[in-house]
Length: 430
Image 1 (cartoon, rainbow, N blue to C red):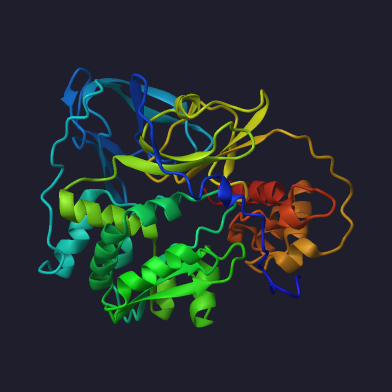
Image 2 (tube, rainbow, N blue to C red):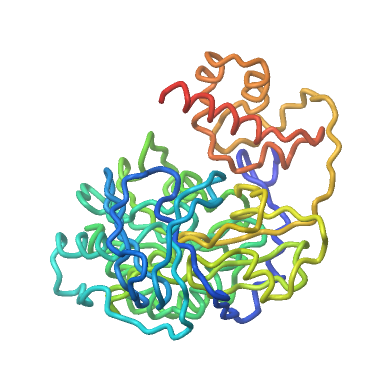
């Protein structure tokens, strides 16, 4: 445990300067996009188009239809092709719908814009659902569910912390869309029924902090909350505790709080103003495995390999391609997977072999875990295939932040062991 930063948090080398100050680069697919029809958690998807159909940017393609209702809109104009199983960022093959991009990007209005100031709560929730707004910070959770029945909500937290190393997509996207961000925050605030909203951002981002404070100075319902520059401050539980010093069991609404990512607020604003769903993403491509790290604006469904080729290629023949950041992301064994409607980063690092040694029993991983778990014991239980002990140690509560691996002096990939334990527990429940 660090005496300077406290339990469950570490100051990391952010590697933010590689992309923080560069303009967002527009990238388009070469010929085709591959629209994921689910994110690994559902196979109940209704598809509304057929092979050979003409579609436009914003055409309704499909709808997730299980216990969640999430429409999927076309990111390009062109002709619908076949369906194809291919690798997904959830680390297993998923069904994708191919669309042959005609390069014209002709648009249709996906739905009618809505004035949030005159809309009812029910109208706003239904609108958010029909717009297909999901958590844009990497989670992909349907946002409308947070607002269906808000009870005793006192604060809306807009999460602009972006604590993972390398990632600056939220920063750049917010900086270039301040007006839309505030429009979205005010709409979300109305939906939440809370009297106030805070925009949480690291105090080290001084320029954007000043811009945000200037933008909300005449709005008594919105304020800027500056957080320490530590990891994982952007994790919902850590951020909520930093703000109000309270804990909760399952959801922050239990203590009167709703949390949404800042880019989700922007996406909601653009849906309200322009009648468009999420058809493109601003994504950080960074890491020492790239020649030119940068943030890109790209239609979702575009292959990672195509984006990398257009921004300057790899800096090494042997790289790790990570969907997300280096701490919480998943290493994918190919670059032939695509940007989803919730992707926020692709981190590409040179593949350097790490030699591990026997555990020194120092306990640093236990002291550092922000979820209060015992990672080394969970890792050992997984190696021993002791499922009962994994359950007793609450392995399923791990957020996979990666700190246990990061702080381990023996260079043991503790996080991967805990991930395996979580998978074993999930299979037991299935």
